Amino acid sequence: MQEAARVAIDLGAESCRVSLLRWINGEPSIEVIHRIPNGPVRHDNSLCWPLTQILAGLEEGLRKAAAAAPEGIASIGVDGWSVDYVRLAPDGKMLREPFCYRDERTAASKEAADRIISPFDLYQRTGTFPLKINSVYQLLADAALGIESEIDTRAPWVMLPEFVLYWLSGRRVAEYTNATHTGLVNLKTGEWDAELFNLLGLPVEAAPPLVATGTVLGSLIGPLAQLDAFRATQIIAPATHDTASAIAGIPADLSACAYISSGTWSLVGTVAQIPVTTKHAFDAGYTNVGAAAGGYLFHSLINSMWVLKQSMSAWAADGRVWSIENLVQKAAECNAATGVLDMDAETLMLDTEMPRRINNELARLGFDAIPDVAGNEPLFGRTIFESLALRYASATANLEKMLGRKLERIHMIGGATRNKLLVELTEQRTGLPVEIGETESSTVGNLAVQLAASAAAGDRVTPAAVRQWAARLCRKQG
Ligand code: LRH
Image (cartoon, rainbow, N blue to C red; front, side, top):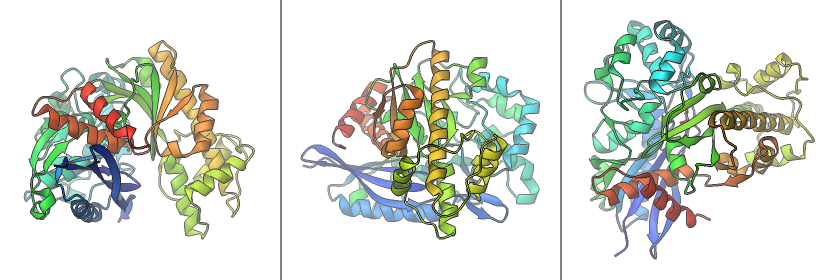
C-alpha cells in the first residue's frame, strides 16, 4: 500500500503556498499544488492582510491536494511569517482582518513600552530583539486604539499560521518557535512571561496556550474532512515561524556556518545552543528566537526583497513591467552600483513610492540619485543587491566577533538561491563560500517536523529526527 501523502502550507508575505508530499515508489516527491498571491492591503488608514481571501485560496489548494492524493493525506502543517495575529470574537470567528506588522501604529506603542521597561532589559528577559514589528508592540497598540477602533484587548488572539491551524483543527494554540517572536516568552522558563504581561498592562488570559514544535492538534474538522483523502488527516503544529521551519529544512550540521534565509526579509545568523543577550549582541541587532526542537536562532533581520518588490510594483503601475529573472540578468550587466543604501533605514521598510525613497536615501548618504525612468530599473536592482551583500558581510563579521570564531561557510536558502548575482556578490563581500540549499526550505522543514512528529507518536520531536527527515526530503528535490 502506498504511504499516505502530507500537506505543508507556507504563508508568505508575497505568496502563500499549498505543497503536497507524495511517496512515489517509496521516494518522496514535493509539488507546489496551489499558490495564492499575497501582500498587505490598505483598509481606511491601516495596513492589513487579506486573510479572508487567503483562507478561500487555502481551501481551494487543499481540495486540489485531496484530488491529487487518492492514497490519502496523513497530516497538514502550517508555517508562516511571524509576529502578526488575529483577534477572535466570542463565536471563534476573526474579529477583523489582521494588521500587517508594517502598519506604523507600533511607533507610539513601542515608545510607551520602552518607558515601562528598557529595551535592553526586555531583551535580557526574553532574548527577543525588541523590533517595532513584534507582537508585543502590536498588542499594546490595540490597547491604545481601544474604544476608537473597537478592539477589545481582552479578546483572545492567535498568531497567523496558528489561526489557520485553528481553522483546520478547532484548537487555538501558540507554537513555541513562533511565540518567542512575540517578545513575551521568558527566556528562562520558555513560557509566557505573565509578570511581563502584567507590567505592560496586557491580559495574559488572551494569549493562547503554548505548545511544543511537532504537537499533534487533532483531526481535520469542517467541510474538507468529508473528502475521502482527508478521512484520517491529523493537524500538526510544525515550527510555525517560517524561518524556524526553513532552518529545520537544512539537512547539514550548522555549527560552523552561518545561514542566510532570504525572502521579503533576510535572516543572517546561526543556530546557538545557549542564547546570547550581551550588550554587543543587542547593539548589533541580534535576536534569539526558538529553533525547531531545541536551540535558538541567533540572527539579525535585514530588510531584503521588499525593497525590490515594492520598486517593481511602482514601475509596473507605470507600465514598466519586469520579471525578477530579467532584472537580475540586466543588473549583472551593470558595471557597478550608484551607491550603497542603508538597508536598515526605516523609510525603506514602508510601502509605496519605493524608487523615490531609494533616491532620497542615496541623496542623504551623499550619492547621486538614479533617474527613475525606463531603462534604469537594473541600476536600481544592482544598487539594492550590492547594498544587501554588504549588509550580509557586516552581519557575518559581527557574528564571528560574537561567537569568537571564524565561520567556514554560508548556507543560503529561500528566494536568493535563484539570484546568481546576489550569491556572487555575497561570496565576494563576505569572503565566505556560499552553499546553495532549498529555495522552499520552509516547506521541507514543515514536512520534516510532521514526519518526525508522526514517528514520535506522542513523544517530543528531536533535532536529529527532524534533520534525518529533512535529508531524506532534500535528496530528491534536485
Ligand atoms: C520571515 C519572518 C521573519 C520575521 C518576519 C516578521 O518571513 O517570519 O523571520 O522576523 O517575517
